[in-house]
Image (tube, rainbow over all chains, first blue to last red):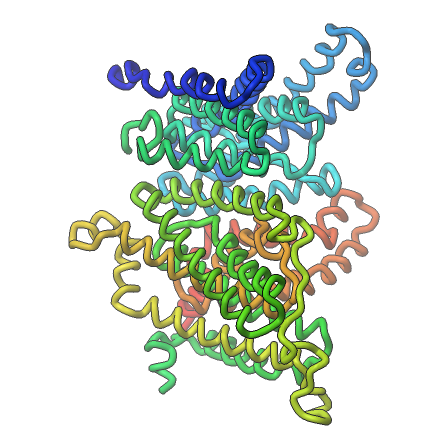
Length: 264
Length: 352
């Protein structure tokens, strides 16, 4: 474990990437903008991905329905913020925060509760069987998306799942909800597909970081956020492909991800 | 003869045998038994999805790996034909070019993904395929010069496969033998051959190694089989079969777009088909594909009836809304994974 902690090479990738992008992005001011936006996006992805990697690291469960929790968080937060519409529209930072705070809290609580149910009903019977976990959590995603449409109309719903040694799953799901709430604010729209869209980025991030590693997940999220912004600026058409390329390069270098977690 | 055709893998259940014969004959006479554009379309979709689900079963059921990129290969096959027909023109040569191009791309991609990620664990492969497939879907809709973007491509089929073409003058059993019927039988025969070929693959010595890897990869490796090589080859074969299924779809529908070939919804459909029908049997994929395509086309009408009956209770009525058919199949899917891991075919064989 100590050896892993002293391994700072992956950490250096982040400044290296930022410096490498500087000559490509001609003007320094847009470079600063892109870097800040990339870091912000990376931090948000980290919040969502950390929940998934947490459940995996502690419980050895990978939830393919994680996107559902993200979507539930986004929907709940959006509903609360719509209900507090006047506060959101008010020209006061504190009133705005007074609306965002409860929205985020509600998102976290609802997706955490959903995570609890998900663990009970869906995940508990299949601990230790990866193939069945993938199938069953994917099934959970299907059902959850449909149920979201039942509750919120023909929009998508997300599922949350409870974690580990029971608490971890709840925390992981709550983090998904939190990430979803913030992503909704960031993108300014909440659609049914939000979970699935973000889930791909989340998966890339936790593969890059090494399954189950929070630190690796953090670095992976920042790398993905920065790459997405730089490439989005330089060559918009290949933006998503660039993340796959990043993943492939890192896996060539470290096949288990940046910080491989001890094998089970 | 029959034994050789089925590669010595008989249905081993009377009811399963009956069901398979009904499907085989039903699809063979569908154009005459159920004339009309919609039912012919349903029959062709069934043929295509049987191939797609059976090739996925080679991965999921026989090799024990979950790939979320199967629709990507399906899409590559479809777009190969579509792009060739759009660019070169409606001829058999362009179909050949598109077919070879699509197959080659699918096999190369499958080999790359396999060698990259199959060394590690099931979950890793599942996640990487998911990421690659969604990136591919987004790329396909962005490269609109080549793929037509979100709208996809509309193109003309060779003259022989168009509705305006007549095979013989007059009618046979009251049905005019036009190009569509010819097209349908092309799809039917190719699908039949592909399913028999997949049966051959899974019952070959190669298939036995795959099953050994599924049951215990460490032991298989210890006996001397390079698991990553075998898994990668299986994934290439499955990708090639999926690309062929995609090519059939492109040849049938004369339009190809991301929704019908690359979307995650199709991936979900294939998963449902294989798991509900029965993993690791090929026959299960056949049964599952028939059930699911029927459900897509006709379950909605049943749900509409339930929806009407529950009109007074808003939430309950919403649960039975015709658009929520996937909800019920999703529940069936989860129950299947828990309680009937061998699916319908496994149940039928158990009752023998």
